[in-house]
Image (tube, rainbow, N blue to C red; front, side):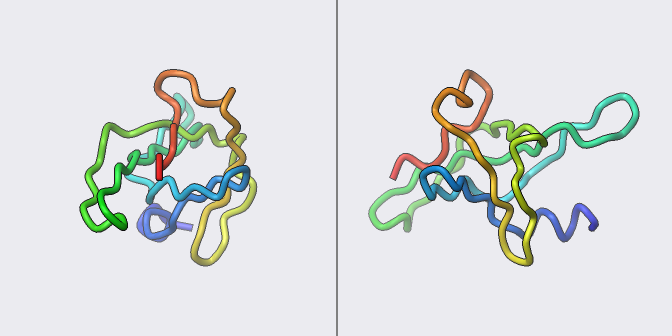
Length: 91
């Protein structure tokens, strides 16, 4: 799968159903192996019509459950949300 294909998929947390957004970048290690996805945190206005992006957050590669045709399912619980890691959609 190419990065162009990957960045078209929505990232969804299976624990709470929150849509975290679409990948905006990858974090690679020294051997060019993907370690994490960078996903924007979306803050929605009334009915999410006025979406604004905050800084990107990290979804560790080990927290990805499945990459499907349309979505990337991740398993992040509140204890997985330290500084710099996704806080998800507050709506």
